[in-house]
Image (tube, rainbow over all chains, first blue to last red; front, side, top):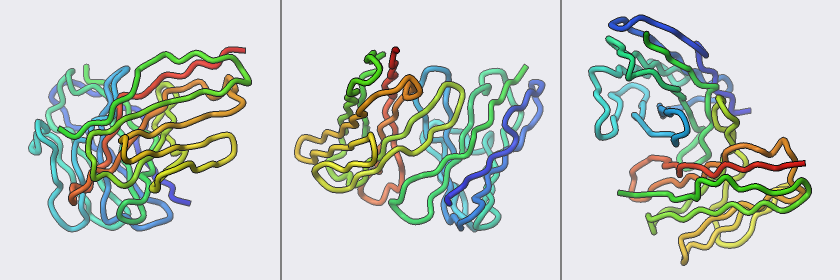
Length: 115
Length: 112
């Protein structure tokens, strides 16, 4: 159980375009999902907490107008990187949990390359 | 700044040996701790979680928690080359922050 599906796994886009990443909890409902970013050889950095039916909570230094998060249902959260630039190239990983303080389960990640 | 600290490694152990991975955390109120394994280019996968002081065993893995010392460890017995990966320690922040904070990870290399 506790499967999180993330799509796409890899995307290459041109500078200035927008990219949408989907995260789905397949066998449980997730009122909260989390979006992380990871640069090469670095740890996971929490970008934002996605709450079903309400606005996301962004971490300090993360631009909410650039990284749009929509948690439209109990099983789906999306992250849209708007007007992407090469410095946005990174590994984006979503995660979800079944209950408060229970372990996070991660999607397979999306490797974004902005040219 | 609430932090989780790990030695980056690499920690090199021979096949069949015990690998010992350590982690300290700064938030004294943290109650839940997790170990994840991450292979290069992949997302993290949960190995173990521990909430109470003491040891918790699951197969070849043993997690140890000492809240007084703010210290968490993971022991891997009978290490295999397939255990070679980066191991991430994580802690849920207390005080309603609702966040899981990760250490930088320790790279483990198990050589035949």
